[in-house]
Image (cartoon, rainbow, N blue to C red; front, side, top):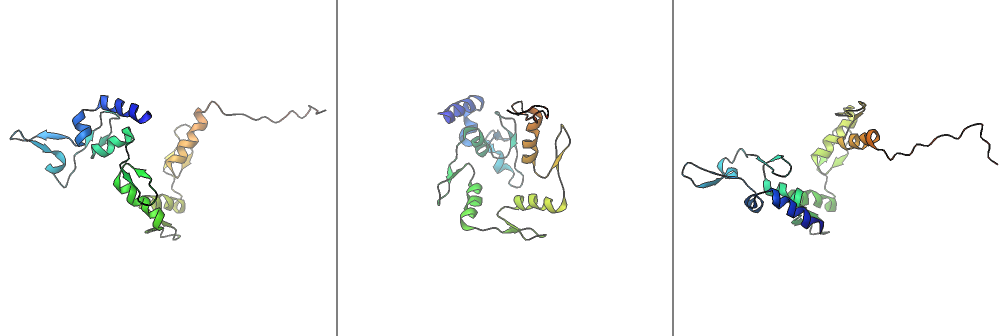
Length: 168
């Protein structure tokens, strides 16, 4: 039921043609519609999403982030994905394939981005800094988790019992 509500909300903000075909079109000099993606194969134009204002190259794929649609599924376990290449990457969990190896320690990864993130542990590079206190982190997710300590009002503060109080 939640996905239907989200889909209705997205549909209200995005022109139907944009959801249906997932690409922006424009009129060429002879007043014929021409796909921007087909106009210049080497350079893909970006369209701005009417829901979140991000500029994206594939509007149909991007809209799935708003609708929750996951049309691609794993043939081994049935897990669903919004993008076809996510299925390919996921399949590596079943095959055990890890083609990317850290040149420092040899640890293997299924995705190059994970290897690059891991390599920061060797260099000591901490690219993410808390805007509130300045603490540095290797990963943005760890920084985001940390930032909750500055805003979380539900923290429980434990105090030491007074030394002069006696238990009976």
